[in-house]
Image (cartoon, rainbow, N blue to C red; front, side, top):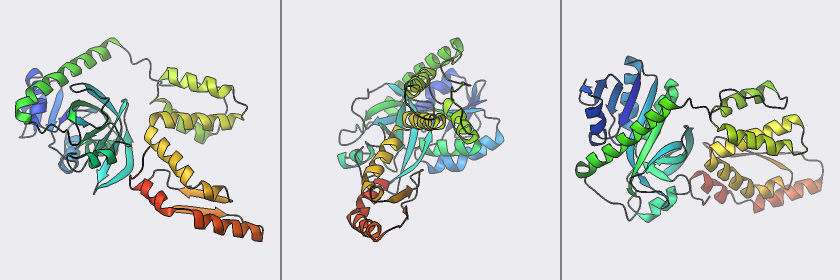
Length: 329
């Protein structure tokens, strides 16, 4: 069965009514279409309760609907966006333990409401949307290996222009808009067979089993037309087949995780003075640990002198700030 999650009861009211859901307890409802769970704002309540719901009921997928703030001013008020990569602001620091869904817009879960421009500008390089709970929902679904879909309706613009509206007075409007989106999406899913997403695809190059395992996972998340474009462009390059597969993996990752790709490019620039002087620069590819590992092959005194000068020029503070979210991508 499906589990529909909302932060507030007001957001869920049209779903509760139209799905004829009945209360199981103060936060959980049941209908013929599935369960409806009111998780409240923030990540901690949902992380404590959601697991017990998934343990008790045979939930096959989780669908989250909710209102959110726009960090990117190009987004439109009252429009619903499907969520792709999810990030977390924890204790005023950005954690790059991202979780990726099959949406098209990135979202960051903030530890408090974004009411000023400095807070907004800190989060904007990471995502276009800010909410308070989706990271907690996604983390539990990831642990239980359950499909998650998330859709956020833009209620206002985050920052100094945030509209401190009374949700009780606007919840019905928001809930109706989200219900209309839900109905349209369900009708589309009924009429289509999701044919554009790849279930299996024959890559024209021979690679290692490790490469094939990575591609099998990535290809289920990317559009078929986009994959074919990547393959066509890479085929024209004078590379060995395994190198072509590595390039394909890189391009798919950059497409699926654009923020991480930009951050890694920033890290590459910050450590260029080291790599140009013989160091092999290694850092946590998941961007979770604030450390750097350097390997150096020494074969001359000049080699040592160049390495010392490179270390003196390397700005560790700039490197560290990237992991703290203080950068512009």
